[in-house]
Length: 293
Image 1 (cartoon, rainbow, N blue to C red):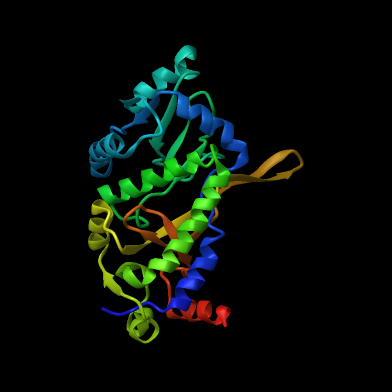
Image 2 (image 1 turned 60 degrees about the vertical axis):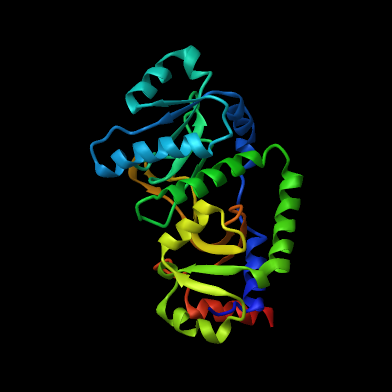
């Protein structure tokens, strides 16, 4: 057991202040309406084992961890289309689904998306879990929590900001009694090797499974690392030559940071940069420390 250097924590805090949680002002009216409507949750009925497992896990997770909507109905993709065809139903439902593919000018692939059934684009979307790994119940618990918290920013943005500031203050005050669980898959070997020389507070390099257990048990005095994906909506770019469409492509900008969360309440406390392979390096770590000098 080693200890995490306080200046590294301060560096993470500086980055976390600019965390892009919440939704855009343009989508706020939609988020308010979604809260008042019954929610249709799409359970894809594909034969692929990925979706067979998702049908079971997503349903269980929604029943356990979703509170933003009072009424939830689980439907297939075909049943969703029937709701869309009925104007009365279309105007009176919100829906949540997994984007199994990229939806042009709407959302990237591999995200959980929520919106109004009578709108062409989703209100909000979020990527759960660790990159392309199979989702666990801990991923659903943490992901659904933040999907809902993002929507809730529309109701009291001032309190939201104050709570974030208080969380950072609490982290600084209690860091000496907390253990940071570092996911071994999120850091490079050089950083693992040098941990002992740069850390002064408690930490452990662990597997994702151990972090999942901490999330599921809401363990006090435990922090954990998890990737956070900043994903833009797909933009359709074209090159118009003489009124003829020469080319068209979908562009999704992606920035990946490794966040530090509290296992007790899933609050994001800090973040640090990654390289191309989505891992944090010793170099990134040292640069962070240098900024504070």
